[in-house]
Length: 269
Image 1 (cartoon, rainbow, N blue to C red):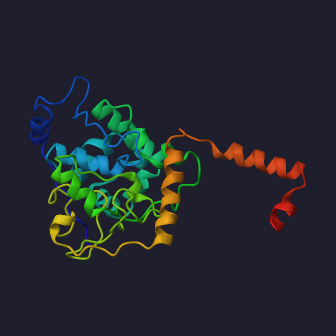
Image 2 (image 1 turned 60 degrees about the horizontal axis):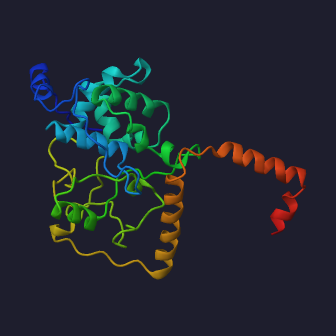
Image 3 (image 1 turned 30 degrees about the vertical axis):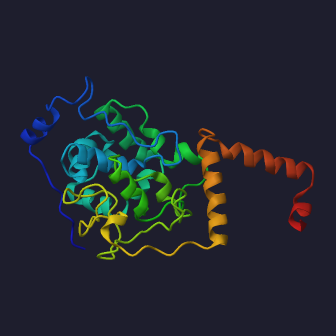
């Protein structure tokens, strides 16, 4: 498999970036605030990595390779070639949480002096529920959201909500999320290179908002809208409940059913 190139920067280039006067004391990188904190449109961790790279006018992959990977535990460090493969195929796992993600978060905490980056993963959203299989393999997006943010001059970012496999409709615009570029039909790379800007296709650089002239997708039917409404409601409730511990709940439920000899009754119902 051909490796995607990683844009590398010399020590002089990085020093020029980091001495630009916009880096707060104690932070080697901009203390970029995550978007959507406290809302269902909370930014994803990989989306934050992309925005952090773009805010420094460098490739997000180069930022990861040169600034983050050296701070990771040696068991989780990647070569430059491996960073390219990881960015394309496996970086979505950083949105799940867990040991590997914790290393990346700790590294970015050192680099940005921010203490809220752990909130951008599934661990802070759904607690200790199983996370495998919850996320898409590649990002999806709402073209209307992208266009609205651009028109209003808001930051263009990737909400974690769009990464959930079970979420297929934008709760704001009630239209289907897309996962392929309407121009080149390719899926989006998770951690990007520096050839695209926020909201552009990572393959052909086409703007992915509604202003691109793409055909408006069909409207969801009523049954699907009702189902997605329930899904969004449940996710919103989970988001506002803190880091829930589900294992004790299911253990206590099991013990209760055993004491009441209610397994067979529950199965019949």
